[in-house]
Length: 324
Image (cartoon, rainbow, N blue to C red; front, side):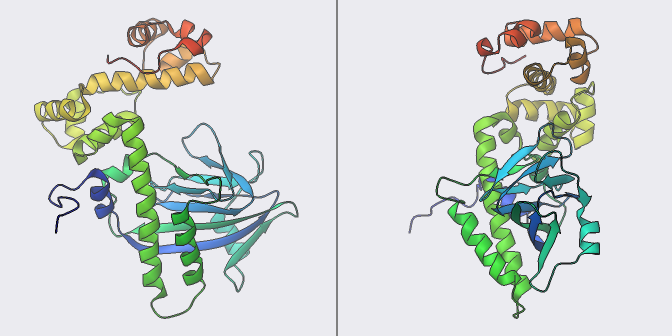
């Protein structure tokens, strides 16, 4: 028999999935009447929300723009950040823990909340992992959005959540163990899709994830791009010597740590130029430059045009940054 894959060289997805195991789960099926909204405190473990009927908006701490969700959409927050769901962006929210304390789920395990307007139904849950998540998990996008297709939810989403709903409503022996396995399956599939997207859209970051210490270095740069990082500081933060870190980083990412920091800053600046009315000086400070002049010089070297020209003629902007 010919092996499908050499198990001695697991791929990136396999390594991530091997590092993430669900210890316990919490599920809540909710019927919400507009206007409605609830917030979930950050807890560091993955959580998910499946829109069974209706629509809503997701806002995540640290993200600028709310995300519109439709029935059949599944979102997974792999890092468990603080977030809110509401029927409309302006609707007020309450902490979910306070809502549950004041109005526990009914005998069918369903939470009912909100006003008398349009109804939305959600299946929400949280995962408690067996151990601290691998740096791979922390390096994934803040939100994994599995969109419904033209014929409804993705087949694996429908099948898994149908089983979760059936088991969650059962008091039979072994129900909790079955729920853990189903949670494992759903989280694994969502993470696999997120990794596939990452390898397409950010191959440098995906490559870095093959080394947990380099993955941590990349994550530090993305989380604190304003800081004037040195190679020494990054190496100490991840437990590498300076020379080993610089060599391994270049091998996996394809450029030096400081070059990657520069590209990250300028990519964020380009988005700010496109999406906000902030002045060039304000954007320069937001992305870690001391002033407009140094920012403009670095931006022009990378993009071939000045920040002002980039903002005025977005249709002519380069698709990708050149390496700094």
